[in-house]
Amino acid sequence: MHGSHNIIGAQIQENMDQMLVSSWFHLHSSVPLSYVQPPESRPGTAVVASGKTIPVVDLGVHDHVEVLGQILRASEQYGFFQVTNHGVCNELIEDTMNVLKEFHGMPAEEKMRESSKDPNGSCKLYSSREINNKDAIQFWRDTLRHLCPPSRQFIHFWPQKPDTYREVVERYTEEMRKLGVKILEVLCEGLGLDREYCNGGLSESPLLLTHHYPPCPEPSLTLGAPKHRDPTLLTILLQEKDINALQVFKDGEWIGVEPIPNAFVVNIGLLLQIISNGRLIGAEHRVVTNCESARTTVAYFIRPTNETIIEPAKALITLHPPIYKSITYSDFLTIFMTKGPDIEPQLLLP
Image 1 (cartoon, helix red, strand yellow):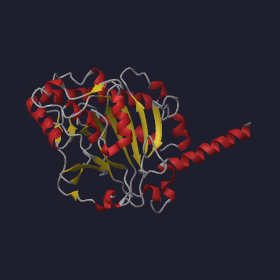
Image 2 (spheres, helix red, strand yellow):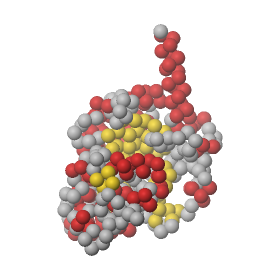
Image 3 (cartoon, one colour):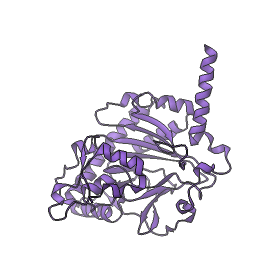
């Protein structure tokens, strides 16, 4: 019996080593063929705008009208902005980044055991993309994702290693919830909606995704994440310091999002683009790799419950007719998973 356990353990280890990029990247001096992007998608061939950056909004400014104007303009013109003086303490930001880097540094078998306790998949660890076809082009990343509603409904499925994981990540997601409410209320006010329009069902099913991008031997050939928009109302991202990797597509060129210590990157998701009837931009973005340093990011996805209807807000379609269909979030996700970057035509009214 003991021998069969050893065989199973060895098989798990072998599968993990094949699956997680962090388990085998150091064994390769070149990018495996399945990770090589088509020529038109390779970062080595795209122009990255020099001297351009996304807006930075200081939430500590006491002039509410000024902050509202900055957030609204950034969301209309870029779909991206960074926030400083946001009220989340630096110690919690550091603790969160450290515990998630520690998780991704654990042995593959241990990481999988810690992230596969829920048979319904509320907590998962995977490589490249969540629903993966082995024949599809792969992406240079490992991802831990789990649901994190304020009800704490799924917390017993979260990793228990590192030892402080649940305690730190629970405090962090609560702070992200508060920050998300604050930003969404400002955006709704700027659009002319009730400040609390996006509260309730539209934001009741948040998700935490931690992406880990190991060093890559040929960064010009592959990507950490492809050109895409997020299937969210809003995404709040914590970047690792000193590593430039996130890029936003605007006016036909890529703009690098330089990490600002203890700032958060906020981007508008496709759902808010629909709710605003196209006024706000769910901007396309991607992640490039580098050959020197591993990079870890923490993304907080503000999302609805599956049965919630996503549609242009009725207050916004009295003067301008709706351009998007009404759709449940579960149907939206189905289209998003199958169409990927080509989703927008599927959402438009005829």
